Image 1: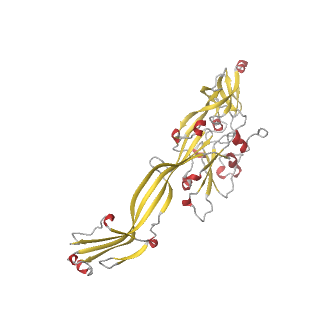
Image 2: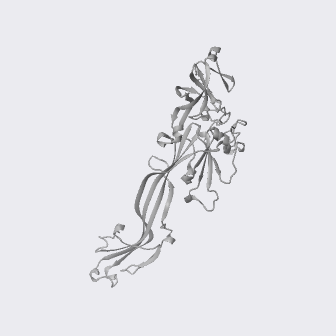
Image 3: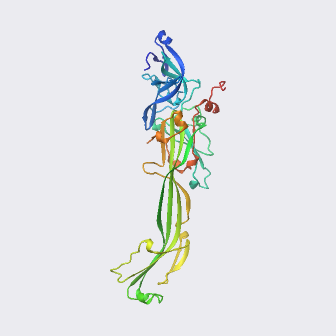
Length: 434
């Protein structure tokens, strides 16, 4: 508890900050400060307390002090923690941290020049508290269905809190926005403000096409159009040279082989966005693959003396006689005069070249979709760096539908926070927009 100050509950849920005597009043002053640091409770999943360090007149006060700031009732209530819950030991409202960011100018209460509590924002404009964000994306061209008009998607998520309350609120282009009065998937919050008004500020930074590695390989696809023709030596046609007409067994074979030269370049795209004091990095790990496919007719002739003791086993494909051909055609085997035909279109064997094939992939310890987080500072926001952030193992969001997204199309919208953003969203108190 902040020494020399008294926190008391005037009515249930209504806490007041008071001084025990006039001497304490005389020793108390107020100043403008800047939040420099939040107390971190854990990094995975990210969690901070309503305790901050502030800088006043260029001097950092190195003790964490409470945020004595009352959040808006019923907004971001959780199953265990309500929006206005108060911790009398710390002297802080438990959820007050959602309304502040490092770098905010705040009103600080001091006793004998020592910072004791943050009372609110210095501009006197109340912040609702930040927990929701909106993500928008377009379907990747590979997944666009010409019969489906919905190619632009958007959803709302809760960034913090009990996983029970991480309910996806999906939207699609052409659908009406839902608000708190609609109930349904929004029923866990008693919102008075529609979500599209809460998440009104487009603010994200992207680092696209971060190269990771290249994987290249060659493999072969065999069609069903293959023949293995067995005959006795004396049955061979006259075109067989005389020195090959001895008694024995001959195996003549032909088949169609598709050689695939495959190259995949692995990348990651990172989008940074802020919710409250937390900086998130949304990561898409993906590959762009290039398949070059060549169709070959493969031919092989094998002779053996005894069909029972020297059975025919086809050699590796590299030892066959290869001739580049088209997707359909015919060929007459020279010795047996067997006519061999193929039609890869009828077989539905994929042989066309495919370029820039997109796929969200898991690579090593990484997932296809990842999220990193850290307490945001003005310096980190100016030059975001994922190496200074912690990978979040689980934060309750649903990512499955994002794997069909074009990673270049992600847009994140968050609650307004700065004076500029609050005015643009119409949140600045009426009569004070100057």
